[in-house]
Amino acid sequence: MNKTLFHLTFPVTDLALAKTYYVDGLGCIPGRENRQLLILNLHGHQFVAFLTKETLVPQPIYPRHCGIVFSLKSDWEEVLSRAEQQNLTFRQKPELRFADSFIEHDTFFLEDPFYNLIEFKHYRHPEAIFGYYDYTQIEERV
Image (cartoon, rainbow, N blue to C red):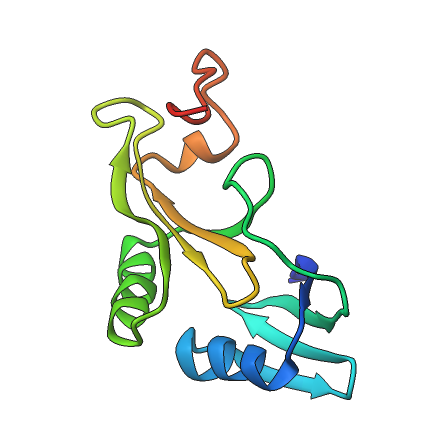
């Protein structure tokens, strides 16, 4: 079976700090690296920290963030537990969104040392990931 992977490159200002955060903190598997980038395996997807000289600043969650949608709640809970144990910065604490609806899902957001935002979520109904077109809600706070 051919597995398609997602690739994302994101800015960092310190590769050693990025490696500490993503490998030691979040549990990513390190891949190739050089003086300008670090390739990470984030739950089977290629996540690339790229060195920049830009000044990075905090940002709102919407409209820009990335994330992982877990098919198993136990996987979501495992990442949550690791983030708590490693004292990673939660930009948004774990919560249940749209409770008792077809788009109900558990979610939390982490913020890395470079203000990159990563969401981790699990839908109670897998069909809600791409379906349930009658539900137009995306975020109740936007």
